[in-house]
Length: 267
Image (cartoon, rainbow, N blue to C red; front, top):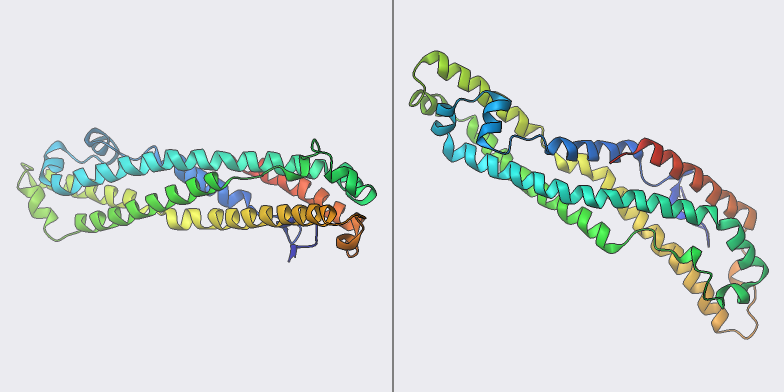
């Protein structure tokens, strides 16, 4: 159940919890850091898996595209990490808004006209997240998922029945072939470990909720401002069903929950 009342935190707070889940974001950012450890060169393929130079050459038509996909994932992951850094900005601004709720809402309830005709009082209207940040997160994640899909196809190719024969055409002994087959198995496991769709899903869903909540909060304030501008006697019409103490309690809860999120989440 969300806190959807007028002037409330809306879906920033769901069942008394901040809409963004710390562990799911931590899982995502851990995956992004792990992406930087992918073997994105022939030398690193050899180092990480033990695939010999002969083995790399024998499987070059598969191995090189894998290297290229790993490089692309690393670049997109770097972009996504930039977007994830914005989540901390969201938290800081949400904390600021929550911390100023008492004096701001005192002004709303006690002197509406003065509050909204004062151009310097803008604390409640701070933007907590931008479309650009959300678009960066979404586009970078989509890129990684698409690349990982291509990687899956390449990983399947490494499991083909002809891999043994291709290795045997280059490796001098059967023992070398078996060693390279073991290395190929390690490489396939690395590819299988790339699953941004599952790792990012909860986090992106959280961000969509957050962005919607920010829009709702802004809508509340715009509605109140427009009501005041259109009336010569700004009254409590929009505030009749608002319980000030309850709304402030929700903002205080949000402040506590956002801090918990920040304590759980690291980029």
